[in-house]
Length: 212
Image (cartoon, rainbow, N blue to C red; front, side, top):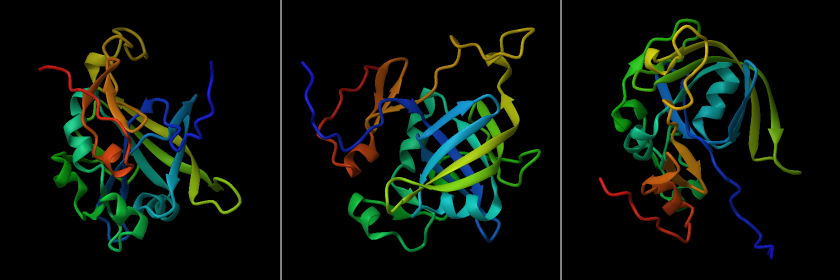
C-alpha cells in the first residue's frame, strides 16, 4: 500500500559535493551540497539563493566540485551548518547556521591550487572537478528561491588508485562516495555519521552509528 505523506525533503540519495569557489575578496569559500547530477562532461547544480556559493558562482562563473569519500564525513559535517554570508539569513539562524569566513580551516581541509580555474581544490578529496558555469536560471516554483547552474567540467583530477589501470575509468568498487540520503550520511550502504544538517532540518529520526 502507498500513502501520500506530503514529503518535506526529497533527498532520496545523491553524492555529497564540496563546492569550492572564490569570494569577492579572493579568499576561498567551501560548501557541502548534494543537489547535483552529471551527464557527459557537464553537471547540473541546485543551490539556494541565500548562500555565498550562489553569489560566487554568479560573479566568478567557475568552481571546483570536490567529491569526498565516505571516510571524510567528519570534515563535511563540521561545516554542514556554516555559511560564508556575513549576515546569516533568518531561516538559517533558526536552523543553527553560523557565519564562518574560513571553511577550509573549520573543516580541517587543505586548499590545493587548480590548473584551469581560480577556485581552489580540496586536497583530501580523491576526485576534484574543475568547472566553468555555462548557464544559470531561477529554479523552484513561481517565486524561485534557488538557482540551477549548468557547469562544464574542464579538468578532472582522480587519485591514481581509483583509476582502472590502462583505462580512463574510475573503479566503481574502489570508489566509496559519501552519500546524503534524507539529510543523513551514508557510505557503503550504511549510516556512517550523525548529521548536523538533519538536526537543523528537524528530521524525526536518529540513525544508529556503525560500530568501529
